Length: 302
Length: 286
Image 1 (cartoon, chains in turn cyan, yellow):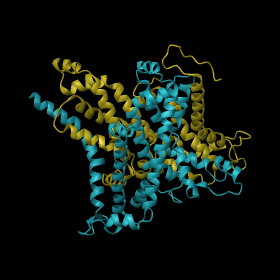
Image 2 (image 1 turned 135 degrees about the vertical axis):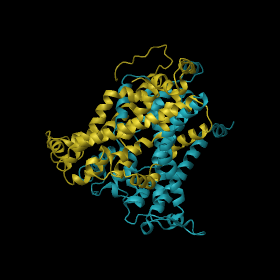
Image 3 (image 1 turned 180 degrees about the vertical axis):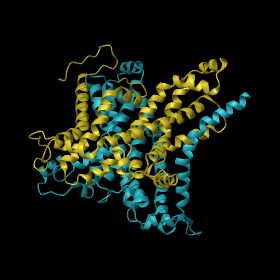
């Protein structure tokens, strides 16, 4: 067989399975989401979505933005969870990774223990926190009653407080990203610290001037992961409050509209899906811009 | 305070005393944070009447009735089996396909390569929830709704970006001479892959597989969406049934939670080396 043809066939055959999966699971659904977000498609026309007429093309978006009662609540919650995720998880991950990188006694033990919650599924952690917050036997309730003995409700139903109850159910468990970062810190050449020592970079200044700048790309990854996982939060909401008392997230309302709702509002679910994709990408773009060399130099006034 | 420090004086990483105290405080706090929820659930599962001794109180005597009930009534074994089947098959399928694609992308030049890589990497930023309805209908149309095969199909297709990136990076580090030598010795393209490159890239592929498997084992969103029959549910999905099936049997509920979380923890204890090496890109030894 002609060598060049054989090579081409080989390349194509090896790419086909992954490409088919990509097309079926990602490309086709995304196209469907975007196209049907301009369509009327619900329980009245289950099998044939139809485009809205010209001038009414944005009906679904209009409905979501102005009439659907939970969209703004969900968007606000999801964005706040993304922000809280970044503000708490990034410094915490960095602190844990730096502390563990010192090679002190027990640090391997602490590292192994800290990953345990990340090995358990977030569904199980959600269920465990549901028990911790239980109004009748949970330890958290006991603490609250020390300060406010008359409080007997579930904190998961107290608006505002339940937002933080959900946050605490996941925000401290960043074992996996801490290990990623730890791997990068271990990869830093010891000579750099040696040189830093001569220049007087000791103790925590050493971390600030040597370690952190050198692992910046991984910090960016950690930031992106913290922001997107907060923005896409679903499991914790489902297990802890099931969307009650002002805790719906974007992911939650998509699933509610598409599957749980008896009116099967497919097009509207896909419309929110399209919004979620766009905002998710915007978050990534913003994080990239914040971490780019240019913007850092600007802030330093160079 | 917490044991001697064994740090050599010449080590540039040497730690000052104040730093060490701070580091130990941080380590103690993170251990506490990580263990508190699990320890509390285990402790409370031994209490016969949770309402009589709520919160932090220690169990007066150890009551194992909940565990007996969970094993005799819930049949927890089958859910573990379902999880094992779905996560493992999904991982094998996905990693096999992606190894092939990653190899071709890492070692050959061809038109449209950049586009394919771009597409695969972009999947990292596609939120699962946004795909809910299209994937739900796709699985239905394929006749796979409410089957383990449907879930395996989703698992095989999802999580392209991370696995692809890890495996491609590994292939890219292998020197090209090996491949040329194999070709000169008369290996076909396929043989070069199966006999030479795949075995060499095993550590990278294994890393990707461990990460993928852990994700799929814990996956809740799709598992609770495409499977309706309790018999076919995976462990994370069955958890959502717990609060209703144990309505007021708090002891049973807590025992069931403990039984659900113990196997992954044990598995982790025995294989923490792999997990940690996989996560840290091989730089941290377990």
